[in-house]
Image (cartoon, rainbow, N blue to C red; front, side, top):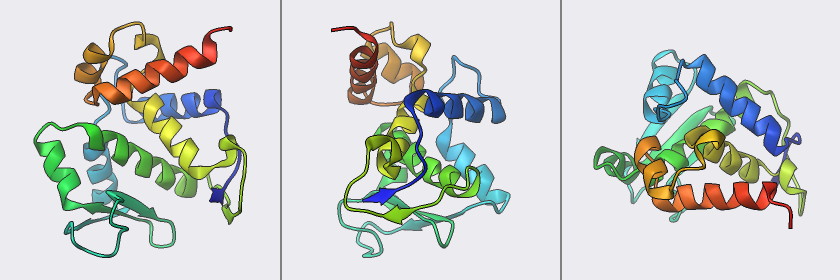
Length: 173
């Protein structure tokens, strides 16, 4: 497990809002993660390498990975093929990797391997939370999951999980 600087849900939400503002993405629009990554690549701010699905550089079950030392996102070819087919599960995957880039190059976080750490210090939890926040805006969670998935180019499962987490956090039991 990798531990980093702590971030609360609200801090991650603010970060996702700043990213949307920086790239001039209106609240009603889906976040064009692939276009953003290509722009960063064109500006030589990040490297991107598309790997054959059989390439052993990534673990078998990992669709992508951000390499901190190389400042590269490695992406399996099937991820991009599915996006071309409007299978939006991988928008979440790319937003997750994008946040690892932000942790390193924008937020200048420090990292250390540990046995355990609180979720708010776990790099993977932070990246998942960021992807959720970036893809589906909190103020839109009143709509049903099917609408959210279509509007924000994500999966129904992602929308349902986002709604579930929000309800769990903000509903008094």
